[in-house]
Length: 242
Image (tube, rainbow, N blue to C red; front, side, top):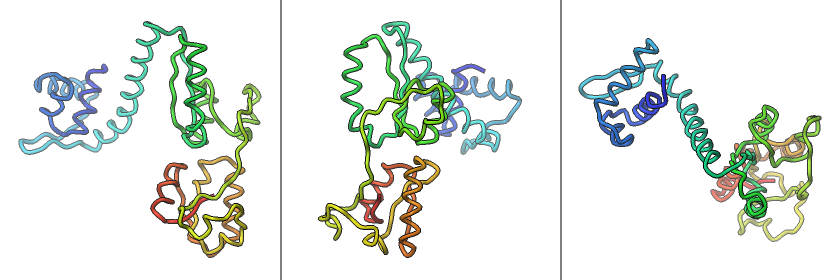
């Protein structure tokens, strides 16, 4: 099994059209057919059901696509990084962040770093709280932007504080509470609340959110996977967030 076979398979799984797959890969339709047939022969699996009218994935094909899509993406990234490394860079730096607070500070940090270390190839990846920590401990990230509590138990990690964050209430500009500089817990009662998934946020934030839920039992609660999802829900007037 080689990269061309995987590329053909993934594109065909997404288009379910041999001629369209050939166009996307700039190859001929017989070449696509050959790559798929060869792949199925090697795996001894039927990945597609092909008739005169349509092309469909088999259950085995669906399972194979789910895994191969990610592998193909990672392979292409690895190839590009290797080429960059060979051409102009002396080393790579893999950085993990969650796209929330850091997004306002990263551009300036990256600009300064790139000026000082022009021969380092930078690779950034957004990951949630737990995924970011796991990738870091497994050496898939060289550094991460994270709250201190998330890495305090990692003896080999070194922490440098860049800034101090605080909890704020985020709500539409025309919300009745928008004019306040301080909002009391009692004012959150009966307000629809948007919270981050407790499994995807720092323990202190999860603790604060749990306290809010306890003190606002009548509030409707929505959970978002990320701050970006939360902002979208706020703009959609589903509720307010802390």
